[in-house]
Amino acid sequence: MSSNTDGGVQIEYGVDEKPPLSKSLLLGVQHIAVMIVPATAVAYIVAGDVGLSVADTAYIVQMVMLFSGIATMIQAYTIGPVGARLPIVMGSSFTFVGASVSIGLDYGLAAVFGAILVTGFVVEGLIGWQFKRIKPFFPPLVTGLVVVIIGLYLIPVAMDYAAGGADAADFGALHNLGLAGLVLLVAVVLNMLTRGVTRLLSVLISIVVGYVAAIALTFGTGLEIVDFSPVGDAALIAFPEPTRFGLEFEPIAIATFAVLFLVSAMETVGDMSGVTAAEGRNPTTKEFRGGLFNDGFLSSIGSVFAAFPITSFSQNVGIVNFTGVMSRHVVGIGGGILALLGLSPIVGAAVTTIPSSVFGGAVLLMAGMVAASGVRLIITNASLDRRNMVIVAVSLGLGLGIATTPEALSGLPSDAELFFGQPVIVTALSALLLNTFVPGPQSPLFDRSQPEQAESEAAVSSDD
Image 1 (cartoon, rainbow, N blue to C red):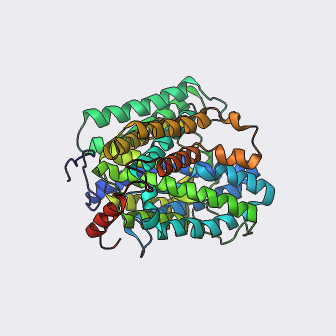
Image 2 (cartoon, rainbow, N blue to C red):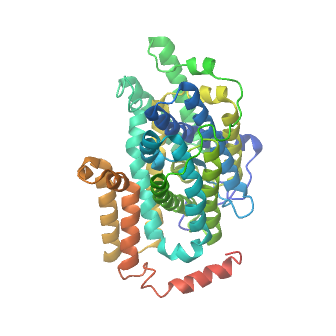
Image 3 (cartoon, rainbow, N blue to C red):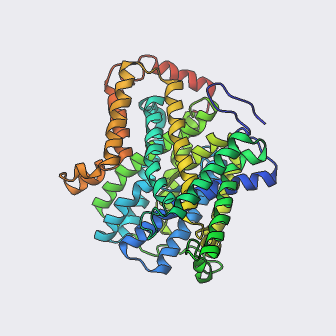
């Protein structure tokens, strides 16, 4: 096992360390347990809003799980230049929900998947290819703010889950809040007051405890908290069908997804920085490049089979920091499990019987850990002088303002409202522009030490 790293957290297993197989399996399941509901929720939301049938909805959910698992394994182990060899779980991002729904209604899902096919390769592929040139524009101050806003933006989503799900008939019911609170309490107590495997698996154990409690409430009170009917309706196995919904190439759809993939790239940069912050360092150029390639290429390939864009999952950044388990082999095993779930709809259906409130307690904890890791990234690598404090204040102020009061933009044209209504976009662009054009030690335009830093990094990693 590894020890504490300067500026980071207590590392139980380093990036290349392999825990025992039995422990690795449980740790991998823990990663999947935390992300599977929010990852597949993107497919449920889009499919429901565009009016897909139950069978088509189930198929899209299956494809999201399959390609999330494949992308996770590639992120952990790499194929050529694709992948970062870091413990980053991949999943379908909420960044693309609004655009997928609006374009799906106006032009059809074929236009959505056609736009993903083009922009995944082109936008994130180009950013990854040229990342060494643009890396000075993404210092810890900028990426840290992206990590912070991702965590803070996830908190309302987690609260919706904790209350039973935004559209649930029993939203806010006492049993939902109690289950979420139980999961949160168990996770914190086990992590803070126990040692060894119990602490490492604290999130997974808390979800299991919450699920058992939910089943007990279902049979003990008659409340419909756990619904097992999806298991009986699901097929045992199903395989991908290329171009099931077709592929069309609409210029407006392509332009919209191009911007969203730029934001997705910034999220990935932030998430990768949040993961390596556990070691008290920033990712190398090679790691950034491989991670961005994985985002773009797997999103494009997945679109052929009707999967929505695949990107790094912020909740799992929180797990790495919460447990101190940074082994990429654990995440690789988790990816394999997720891919198998994508080939077996009945298994995936069984997982989805876990109530939203149970996941809400875990996601709430993880969202807070993501935000905390972003704060640590900033204060460890950037001096909070007057310049940087102003950048933090403006970026987070605008991002949280949009998150809490989205109706403030209702007077803008619909396309502008969609674009600027994304808190991550507003925070990221504000931080990027202010940091670039305001003179100071983090600015790539005015800080003369940047080339020296680049040369220093090149000396450390000849592959860069």
